[in-house]
Image (cartoon, rainbow, N blue to C red; front, side, top):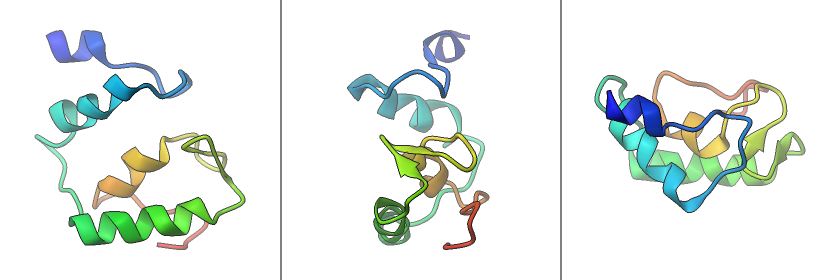
Length: 79
């Protein structure tokens, strides 16, 4: 599967090309929140002391990835 070969691990620093792997892998099988809800989640995360360089220090996920998926939640229960 070519998509799996291009996916980067979550410990790698984010790059501009990393935005596409979410859309090609998980968007096909996982429900996403609306754009409005996504932006609200990102706003909360931007003010969070556990967010560092687009990574959640509580769970280790990319903030933009976790905030987009409807099945995910904030590990400190903000959203």
